[in-house]
Every structure is written in structure tokens, then in C-alpha cells.
Image (tube, rainbow, N blue to C red):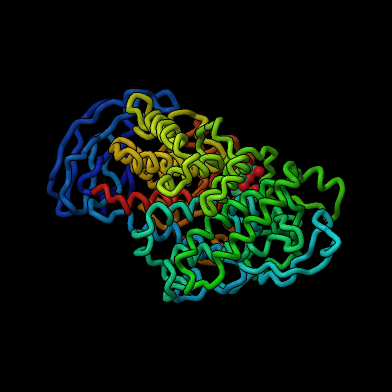
Length: 560
Ligand code: 9MR
């Protein structure tokens, strides 16, 4: 429209559903009237800004424009005298459909061992990297059957993040989240088309994409003992090069309890999800369950094998300095693996390791996966054995209370979101907190049908797409001011101006582990759209997965 757009107006840069709440945040210091114009310039809505009940994290009062009653589909701009015009936005019934699919397609661009062809990847076409047939057993992982330096084949998988290494712990929560998206919304997810090489087979695309990583995970298990290697990695991070140019030796490194239990949980969940697709993937469901059981047995025999990279490097060469994902507490991984194995097999022996007398809800992360156990138990509550009957109402009440505390209007942030109620939300990968809060709210909504939960989940999606302290849409390729320079080797090295689309930036994090200057250290604004800024602007599979869950769940539930 040629109008100068203002960074002072923060809203979901895609837009809104006709019948859902619609809020924009205005960074101004006085109440005033606002108007909304259609593309023909006609004013079709006017209202008055209201001050935020709470100051934002800088201590300022900010202002809200509520135009929820604008229900007419169309393209609009919002105008505030002091703040000028917003970016254009739309109101329509499938406003998040494209971004929801793109969030899953983002995983396709992370694939190792396959060229990305133009017909699927568009201008982000690239040669294959990391074929995985020349992987070395690191001395830390050596056994009689697989001595140090032996060569094994570990093809496929997703690159973890901006780097080209792959880590089982982080794949665990990622796969659990994507499988849960499918398990919660199977009918909707069968309609989500990704245009990937497997799109024409008889498996839903989201499962096809997950199988690329599932088969890699299977190869990360030592068939001789059931233990699972922590990661497949270079000794040190690559420079900003394309995958096919990244040819340093790669190793499987030390088995560990967290990796092995996360693996067991994913394989158990995969087994029940793939069971109905026996014709498409013969035997895979059974192989997954066998892999889950042997991993579980390894973990029972080795219940305290932490991955301590520093200790490992004192003992073995070459030293490995890539991501650690070194979790030293395994009670949550035991809960998660036990829950998934129990749900799939109904074998009550697993309940011995599931601490249902000590239910503790928290937003999940790679090092804290207990919530995934609770989600799965609630989702499958109709098919559990009778000894679980008394636990379900307790879990259900706790999740409802947890979601109420997230969505309570009195405690929302100044931006009227669950995200950012506290500065603690803005740690490394803060965007995943917003998305994972959204998942908790959706799971509560599925139990209670309480609209307040659904609306708060949607508000956190608004946050990721622009209603936030940074002025960016935190998703590459979506919105009028998207992240353009994520810490993502492919996006930096491919010579294409636009970054690979559908990837979620880690988001504001004032801790500056990367030493890159930030515009401010106010927690909700502490992001630099700089490709060196790995602490605030990297992308990662464990952040994209909850984002994919949230966007697709919201589309499935159509808060039109
Ligand atoms: O997401 C991880 C974050 O929680 C940790 O604090 C950080 C430092 O250990 O590592 C992050 O994970 C990175 C991983 O180690 C390597 N690949 C990129 C990941 C995202 O930055």
C-alpha cells in the first residue's frame, strides 16, 4: 500500500481468524483512538487504546488495541496517530495454514544424506551432505564388538540446528512433540501436505518427515547391547559452509542414560503410531518396539550414565566440543520412557518406574521431558489398564490448574500473553517456551474445552509471529518483518538472500553466550537478527517442533 509501516505496532504479522480475539500492542505513552482501514482506504473499525494492566519488562506502560469484533475477512492496516500504520495483515479462516505446514517442512530442509531437489526445495535446492556410511566409533563409545575407529553406517537424520551435528537427546523431545501432534490431531494432520519426496506414498506427510529422523535414530542404537549413542558429531563445529562441504570425520560418541531413555520413549510411541500403517511400512512398528525394549533394558542396567563432555575429553581423543545436551538427572526420562512403553504394551511392569505418586508439571525442554509422559497418558486415557484409573483425574486436575495459571488474565504479560509473564521465560531458545506453553494450553483445552486456554495458546502464536518485544516475526519467511539472518549454516552459505523458510528463531535471550552485541538487555527485546548470534537467533529442531505443534493444533481447532 506504500504506507510507511511502524515498528511500534506489534501484532501477528500474518493476521487473525474472523471470530477469534484480535489484539495489537502499541508502544506509545498515551491513550488515543485507533482505526483500521481496508485496502481501499476506507476506515471500517475504530476504537480506543487501553493501557496495559501491568508495565512491560522495561517498566513502561504500553497500550493495547482490541479489535476482536472486526470479523469481516479481508486485508487491513491499523493506524494510530502517534505510531503511524501497522504492517498489513489479513483476517481469514485459514490464516495459519501455510505457516503451520512450513513449520514441518522446515525439517525437510534439515535432512542429512539426501539432495534437496528444486521441485521440493525451490530456491533452497542443494546437494546432499553427510551420507553417513563412514561414521567412526569414538574411543568413548568403544566395545568389544565395535572397537574405537571401527566404521559404522548411520545415514539420514535431521541436522540439529544451525550446526550439522545430530544429538539423540534433542531428537527425543523433538520427535515426541511431532508424534504427539499427530496423535492428538490425526485427521487434521492427514490433510497437511508438505511437498516432500514421499508425499505420494500412503503415509501422512508429517509421519514421512519423522521417519527420516526415526531411521537415523534406529541406527544410533548399538545392536549388540541396546545402548544408544549420545550423538553423531564432528569433533568441533564447522564453519559457515554448505552440508556437502562439511566433510570433517564424524563420530558416534559415548552411550548415555538420557539418550537411551529418550530413544526408548520415541520408539515406543512410534510403534503404536505406525501400527495402522503396516502395509506402508511393513515390520517397522515391531522393529521400533523391539528397539524401545532393548534400550529400556540397557537403561535399567545403566541408570546413571550422564553425558559429561568435559570428563570425557580428559580421557579420550579426539576431544569433542560440539553441543553437549548433557543432562545429569534421569527421573523425568524414566517417567517418559516408562509411560510410552506402558501405553504401547499395557505391560504394568513399566509402572514401577513411573513416579505417579509425585506428579510435577513444568514446561518441557530437552533436559526435562516428564510433561510428555503426562500428555501421552491423558491422550490415551481411554485405553489404559485399571490401575491407572485413579491417576487420570489427578493428572487432569493438575494440567487444568497449570493451564489456568498460564492463561489467567490477571497474570498475563503486558503483551497479554502467557509468554513473558516473567523474565525467566527469556532463556536460550525462549521461543520454544512460548510454543511449549501453547502446547500445555492446547492439551488442557482438549480436556476441558475451556476457551480461555485456546485463546491463550493462540496469543502465544501471535507472540511468535510478531506480537512481541522484538518487532520481528520470529519465523523465517513469514510476516512483513521476519527474521532474515538466523544462525543457520545453510542459510548463510547458500547464496540465497532469503533464509530457509519455516524456521523458528530461538528468540530473545539477554545472556549473550555468543558475545554478539544486543540492541538492549531488556529480556523480551534481547535479540539480534545477526547470523553470529547463536544465543538469540539460532534455529533448532526442538524449537521448531513445538512451534509446528502449536500452529497446526490451532489450525486443526480452527478458532474461527
Ligand atoms: O538449546 C541448547 C541450550 O539449552 C543450551 O543452553 C545450549 C548450550 O549448551 O545449547 C543449546 O543447544 C545447541 C546445541 O548444543 C548444539 N546445536 C545448536 C543448539 C541450539 O543452540
